[in-house]
Image 1 (cartoon, rainbow, N blue to C red):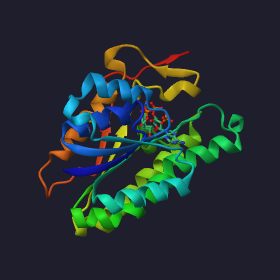
Image 2 (image 1 turned 180 degrees about the vertical axis):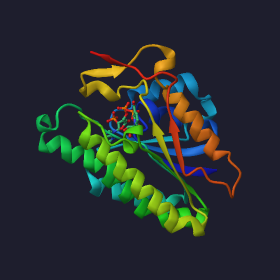
Image 3 (image 1 turned 90 degrees about the horizontal axis):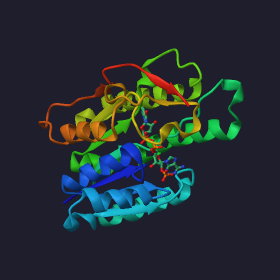
Image 4 (image 1 turned 90 degrees about the vertical axis):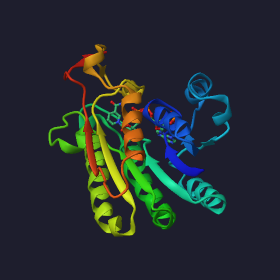
Length: 240
Ligand SMILES: NC(=O)c1ccc[n+]([C@@H]2O[C@H](COP(=O)([O-])OP(=O)(O)OC[C@H]3O[C@@H](n4cnc5c(N)ncnc54)[C@H](OP(=O)(O)O)[C@@H]3O)[C@@H](O)[C@H]2O)c1
């Protein structure tokens, strides 16, 4: 059985990816703080015999010391085949209205933690000819993220890091894919004064991203999707 680590497995896109990984017979170590949504999904979406292979790791990713210890403990038991850097946080609004704590949190969760986990796990991933999937954002590709300047910059940093790392490790058989989702119906915009539009063709679903992960896991070895953008048919947002 292959072993995966996924950050932000407790809600939204990460929970949907964790469910997909369980269906694909992975043992899944999922990091998050509040697993109530994932617990419900486990009971409704995952066959009973596979539920035990979800191992929740409740922790705040800002506590890098606990994260490093937890990852080293997992590495003593299993070789990691898949790392999904999914956890993310976004604060939106005029840049002068952000505060230092919010900027620090976005940089830590969206950029520092993926870099740290890649560094900790690359040796295993080289040995297992494994895979890294980074959940970035369409904002990484835009230069006009008004009212999301800092968030967009963190995602651009993640995308840049990932494409450079891919060039560094491709000769070792490690695959790296960066997914750039557009607006997805999750709790992500809880801090914003807007949210995804309600029409089904104006937003993505967490399962759309999870289905993309399934495609990546089943792709022919030797062929790599380095960069994928997912977007709904229509571009629309709703003011709250
Ligand atoms: N939704 C969108 O429109 C959209 C579009 C493009 C890209 N993305 C990206 O997709 C990824 C997933 O977002 P989502 O839409 O699924 O949002 P979400 O529902 O808010 O989920 C975010 C996940 O990250 C975890 N997380 C955040 N801060 C954490 C911390 N300090 N410690 C531990 N876990 C933490 C959350 O865990 P807890 O809730 O348990 O703390 C949660 O599981 C993010 O990287 C986001 O930037 C989202």
